[in-house]
Structure formats: structure tokens, C-alpha cells
Amino acid sequence: MRLRNVKNKEIIMNNSSYLIKDCYDLKGKWNKFFKNNNPIYIEIGMGKGKFIIENALKYPNINFIGIEKYDSVVAKALKKIPDGLDNLAMLRLNALEIDQVFSHEIDHIFLNFSDPWPKTRHHLRRLSSKVFLEKYDNIFKDKKIIEMRTDNRNLFEYSLVSFSEYGYILNNVSLDYHKDNSPDITTEYEDKFTKEGLPIYYVLCTSNLVKNRK
Image 1 (cartoon, rainbow, N blue to C red):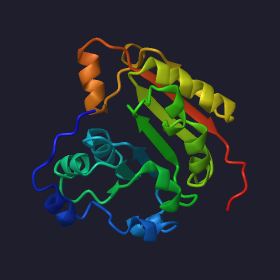
Image 2: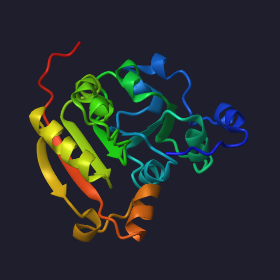
Image 3: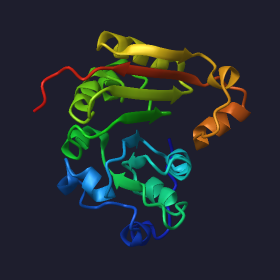
Image 4: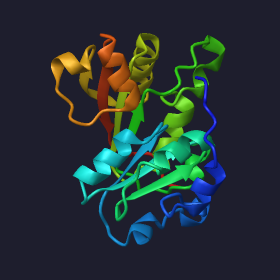
């Protein structure tokens, strides 16, 4: 993916109250940050922010956190947020560090159009690999819920196997999500691929958190 530089991205990021710069200090304290005990949903790889922002607007009783590692992409997302959205925060974070920021306080993870890392030798970099599933165990509060959308068939098939082998139940699997459903909240990539007539692959998987907490 080619990233276009955003002019004044540093200024945008430094001046936004939605970008949490001390996120490591908030580990285990996110409900205090939001000043409520509402569920916390995160999107890992939020892109330009359309999906997470629209969810925060529609569901005020859920706290949403968007996570992205590229400055220019974060800046674009921050520019879209309306004022007064108290149930939304954004992090500039590498997903490998996610368990350094959260500790058994996340209720739901969205993985939308993640980097497929197509080369076999890179498969452990995929957000649905065992490496990341183990990290998610350390951040989920109780029941584990992962919702995934992708246009990449190989990544989708890999993810179904990875989720299943790790003990997740595949509750809802679709090989053409927009044909089977009419989602009212979509991502930028999703809109692009749907207009091109490409199928969107979807899975909702769940599992109980049974491993010992650290």
C-alpha cells in the first residue's frame, strides 16, 4: 500500500484530543479514561477512520478505540472526527505492542482489511496468526469476540484455520458479505471493493477466555 504524506500531520496529531499519546500509562485503566464501565471495542488497523468513527456515532454506550501505526493515516482519520465524541479514542501504535497498552479490558476486536502479508515466510505477521491471538488473550476482558472483513481470499482461508485451531468457534462465515447482508457501516476499502464487484469475506468468531491471566 502506497501511503500519501499528509501535510502538517504532526500538527494535526499534536493538536487532537482524540489521539492518546500516553496510552502505555493507561494499561488496565481504560474505563477510568472513558469515565464509565461501558464495553470497549477496538479496531486494529483503522485506516482512515470511517468505520470506527461511524460506530462511535451510532453506539454512544460503547467505547471505541481505533489503532493505526502510520502517522499520515492517523492524521487523516483525526481530521474526520466531529467534536464532542466522548466514546472515541485513537492510538498511533504498532499492533505488536497491543498487550502493553491493554490488560483484560477489551470486549470486541475488529480486523478490517488487514495487511495480508502474502508471502508464506511472513505469515506470523498477520493479525490473525497465533502470535497475535496469544496477545489478544491478554487484552480480552472475558469472552473473546473477533470480527473480520477482508477482500483477500488467501488471508481469509488462513484466518479461518488459525481461529479454529486456536479454539475459536466460527459463528458466522460469509464468502460474499454484501450479498448475504446489508451492512450499514463500512470501511473505505470495503466501499471501493464493493463498487468494483469484488466479494467481501466475513467471519465472526468467539471463544471463552480460559487461559491464566498474568
